[in-house]
Length: 136
Image (cartoon, rainbow, N blue to C red; front, side):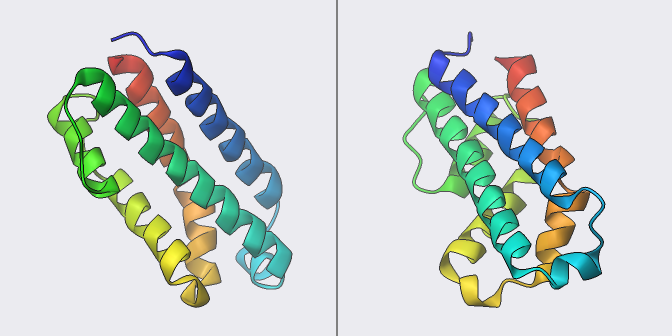
């Protein structure tokens, strides 16, 4: 399946947000991060948008394949696996759960978890992009 312009634009937005994370956190330790409320807020927002992009792409590809609709974002990820577009639902299902947490339980976001996702799991966003590029 050839990627349409909407999916291509969303993939570019995903890359832009990964770049923001790299710039925001370059040279920042966990302690630096914990002491900077503005950086925490910016990181949380960039992660939320990046995950929303993944969800949007999943739903768009499902529609293009005529394999929908799906009821939840987690189901959208699972459907991409079933369609052979993604190899595994992990770590993308974890991303969706994290997005739900920061949107609905925002008062309990642990800065250490936020930092870990932004630093240690940033490559997962690139892996999603690469899997979409390779199979579509």
